[in-house]
Image (cartoon, rainbow, N blue to C red; front, side, top):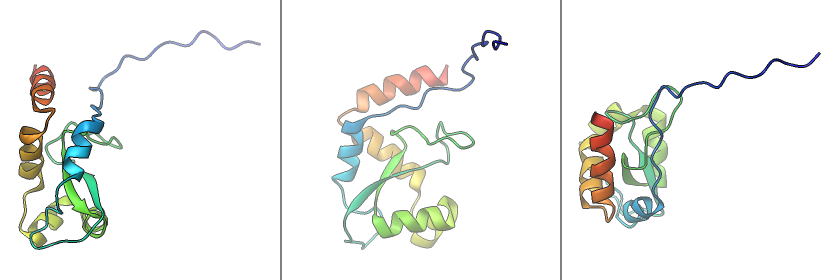
Length: 116
């Protein structure tokens, strides 16, 4: 017996935006934790206030630069506690990276489309 024809699902969430150029730009900065000089730098996605969903990584526009140790700590203790411990606002920093990015015009265009 053959399976019946599959019914295609409609997408109920926005697509995750990927940008290697923006990630390279973010990775070219030092760790966002004040006073940290550790390397290597990793691109850390910020979930709070982003386009992420349950079990879904945010778009690359919502990223900050963290060293490997602080990136691991961010995942281990969570974004809120991490920001409080280090006195930083990850969401604001991600917005600053997006505004300064070589892909800033593309980011603004896609965010306007998402707000509609």
